Every structure is written in C-alpha cells, then in structure tokens.
Image 1: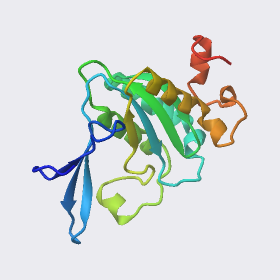
Image 2: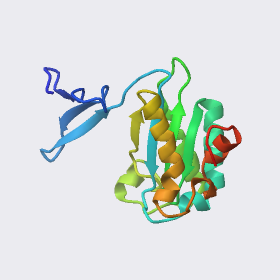
Image 3: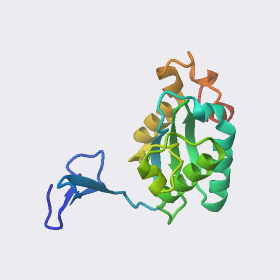
Image 4: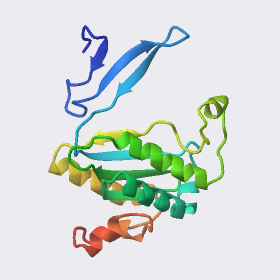
Length: 191
C-alpha cells in the first residue's frame, strides 16, 4: 500500500506485518528498494545467510572459524540459538534476542566480518574493494520474524531437515553441523 510518506507497507498479509520498503531513485533513474527491517525487541527470528560463491563447501570446510565467530559475537552481543544448521554454502538459524534488544543486523555483520577475516578472500568486484569487503558472503540475508508456536516449530524443523532436503544425508541426525544433536540430547527432538 502506498502512503503519503512514499513507502510501501507490506501489511496486507500476515507474512510480513512490519516490513516497509522505501522506493528510492538510483543514479540510473531506476527505483531501488531500501528495506526497513523490523525492530521488535526480544524477537525470535529465522534467518538464511548465504555465501557469495554458491556451490562451494567453505562453511563446512571452515566450520571451526564460523563457530569461533559466533561464540565471540555472542559474548559481545548475546542471543540465544534456538536452532542452527550449517550447509556447504549457506546456513539457516533461529535466534531469540534478549528482552529490550532488536539489533540482529549488527550481530550478523560482526559474525560475517569475523568469519571473513579467517578464510581466503572470495572473488572481489570493485564494489567489494570500495566497501572493504572480502567477497565471502552475499551482502543481504533473509529473515522472518516468528509469529507463534507453529511458526517456531516449522522454522526449527526446517533447520533440522534442510540437509536431508538437499540430499546430504538420509536422516537429520546424520548431519554433523546442526543443532538437532543438542535437541536430541535435551529430549526436544525424537531421533
């Protein structure tokens, strides 16, 4: 819906009640989206984060560097990991932020930067060089704010079953890089 402020509000359906997309005119006369991320303190959020070079195995090859980046970031900017799965070229996660805190973007920026400093540079375009990026990650990521218990269960299940969906394993518990093992030990997931 267009408003007098110039942004499009995506509230007509339930999947994105907080998303605002502002249309700005770029240097070439094209309207470019300028996403306004939701600011919901203490939210539980599902994420998909992708490497710039799809089809590689960097995340599982360097899973130790990723774990270290997440551990260090959680010390500086705490959050709870409800679910997490690392696949060769992308990952999915469900986080719950602390009460009063809505800043998941900083957490991802720091995790991506810490990881990128520990691995070889990717293919860098001039825009990467200008922004001092190493060309490892896609710039954006996908997030979805969880809206209730069924939505939460679906997001956690998606994380656990994604390696099966991609054909890496036959059962979720056979994938090494998943929080499903923690959930099995805690009795929250049937093996």
